[in-house]
Each structure stands twice: as C-alpha cells, then as structure tokens.
Image (cartoon, rainbow, N blue to C red):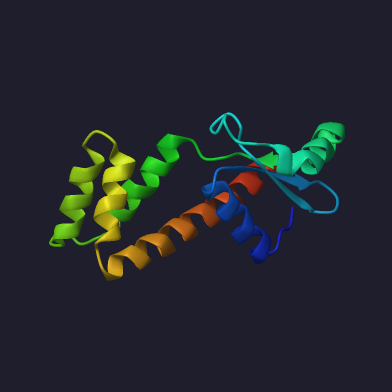
Length: 141
C-alpha cells in the first residue's frame, strides 16, 4: 500500500488526537472518526456520514491501529533516552514518568524545558509517522 508522506503525516496527527483512521483499500481515501472507546462521551453527530461510510463498506477499508497507552508511554521513555546522561532534563523526565500520573508529569516538565519542548514534538511526530509506516507494512503482509 502506497500512501503519500502527507497522508502518513495526517494519519499520525489524527491518531495522536484520539481518532481512528480508516484507509480505503483501492482509492486510499482517508476517513477519521473519534475513538468512542477511549472517549465514550464524544458526540458523534459531526461524523455521521463518515461512520455510515465505514459501517456500510467495512470490508473496503482497513484500519490503522490506534496507539495504546503503553505505546504513548514508550514514546516518552524513548525521547528521554535520546538525551545525554549529563542533561538534568533526562533525570527530571524519568522522575516524572515514575510518579503517579506520568503523562501529566511528563507534559509539565517538557512544557518548561525551553528548546527541548520543540525537540519533543519533533521526536513524537517522527515516532508516530514511523508507527503508521510499520502498521501499513503489517497490513500488507
């Protein structure tokens, strides 16, 4: 399955925002709908057409699997691992990840890390694009 880099980037961004992604097997059309399992209170009214399209033609689409929370945690760990051992931020990020509510703690640390905040976003975006590429490879097997 060949998708453009723009499509891969869009899928990665939507997965990161909590959406499910479906790709039409023939046309490569992308459809995004909220993940109501992870967000049960989400109002689906704005996605009626997309939802019906998927339900009525389910076999024509494949789904790029959304990330589980352990994958999101792994992204944060992987980012911390890229930092030099002498970097105090690395220690602070690991401390944040080992506390209760690691996602919130990591965000609080990274939000006040100066230039590393953008490095985190770049790292996460690249990790997600790689995830999408690997997901596509698994589908093709």
